Length: 402
Ligand SMILES: Cc1ncc(COP(=O)(O)O)c(C=O)c1O
Image (tube, rainbow, N blue to C red; front, side):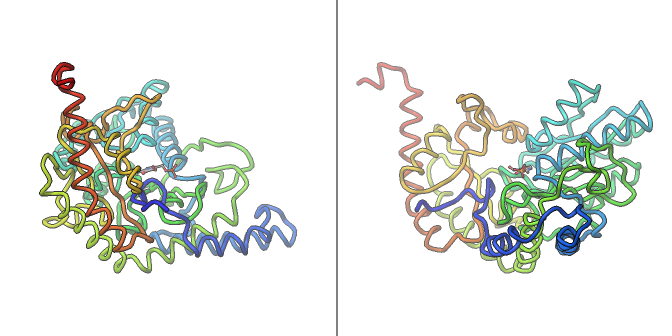
């Protein structure tokens, strides 16, 4: 079995989820049915809704179940934008940093292309942190024309944790709704929807050990959204479609368990991540991306390490690690087989050449000391080999042939 360092993509399903699914899949039918079986499913969903709400610091009535994080982000951005514009046609601006996940970025770009949204970039610093005074100024410039602000809680590539409560306060001062994508943060960082100041917040099951295909959007009770999906009117008419009762039960059980174990697990993973960092930081050409967890631990996800290797290609590094039995990620999208530098790194000010050498290591609930020791031992040699390969590929042909 390869050693798995890609928990930020999907973390393996936890035993609790398997147990709940195994018990509930044969039992739970359609929670909208009026007969006894339907009522039993409804009771299970209601109880899971309360369980998830309490894990996320929300009220049960604020939980809208979705198929995952992408759908939750789409519902938040499209729903808020359409609602705000319907109330006042001047509200066309969407304020967002360039480091958002594609689920947010591409939705905003679609609103720009199809619905006359104007995208305004909130600047970030070299560690990916939003510039709060710049955001305050953008909001003050023209609050009447601002439909919404969206800033992710923590970044999926470089692990940067944003000052969510401050952003929430700035938005509240001018009465602008604020969406946060907390898909990576939930279960890894302390999180309370009530205290965040956010209007809407996206969650995803498969990032915390629940199955793929279940997620939620938390929607504050005073916030109105236009639905994206129309049909049977489930989830307060905000998200039609038959509820996945067993998936919801598994998601809620895993959320409760993960949040209960969070302080100890975050400390364990941060310790292991720091061991990896120490193993690579002395290696030629390696640089850490995002905040340094040893000087500013509160600014970085405890399970994330992200490096760029000067003169190496992230893909070849990933391939060499794969061959050596380690699953990692470049963190960048690969469109039609053409590797592109990550938009996150470019937004943070890295050059295309530097951004090409990116590698993300994300740890999770079943990462062991042994896994980390094995990677720490193998990494320096693999990095050196991938640099030699990268530098050789860049060299003039005659030089390589000699
Ligand atoms: C920050 C962030 N937002 C949204 C998503 C999309 O979530 P899902 O895979 O549940 O649709 C992901 C998953 O990669 C993510 O990391």
